[in-house]
Amino acid sequence: MIKPEIIKIYQNFISKNYFLSSLLIGALLNMAFPPIFMIFIIPIIICSLIYLSLNCHSKIAAFKIGWLFAFGHFLICFCWVFYALWLKNSDVIINIILFIIVLFLYSIIYGVFFTLVFMTRGYPKITSLSIFTILWGICELWRSYFIIPTPWNLIGYSFGFSDILMQTTSIFGIYGLGIIIIFLSSLLYLNHRQANFSAILIFLSLIAFGIFNLNKAPIEYFPDSKFRIIQPNISQAEKNNPAYHRQIIKSYVKLSLEKRDEALKYLIWPENALPYKIEAQSIWFNSLK
Image (cartoon, rainbow, N blue to C red; front, side, top):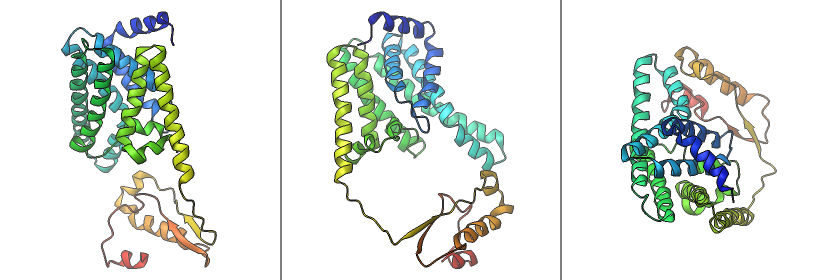
């Protein structure tokens, strides 16, 4: 258990400016994702968000806290999307507008989420924490299917550094793992021995299941097969420039054909290796067959 005095000091610190704290907490959450994987900050951030949402002075304040948290979080984690759009399309103004619209829509979802959590502050704490966890899962599902149909930056990815911890997705999926992570983190908000013990027990159960699941998985070896991984180190700017398209394909073909032997059975090209779609029965299509 953490000493109540330390918790009080921290709560007073983030309470001095609810809105700035929410923005910074949202940005800081990105540290838990690849490639940094600072997962120990997740319980701190989740407990901070629960405290802010349950102790602000109005529904409007709760909405602002959720909105600013999401804005800070997605502003940082989606910068690469804006960069990709910028390279793909020279119209910077349109890209900025699209980026802001997406941020605005994501942030509204979390604003509503925190408002609903604020409305549970008269309930028992465990009820509020359960609702917080469920709403977090709903937000992840909603933004993955109805705004941009891509499951980006789900909290479950924070366990991606460990094959053992990720085994839970074989049962509950990545959204279910996210709900488990949030619930474990929110239990620590109660700050009493039984809740802490329950969180540790559940976490150890995840590890035990992961080890069991990996050990029972069959391992197949192919000693007579050789693979070649092709990586010509082409920049994104070159991929987006039509003047380089022919040279890019030639680079992959050249590396694929170099020093081949009879045992070489598989060539692995990187994701999005070709900068454009190759039409069936075209010269390039037939040459790659």
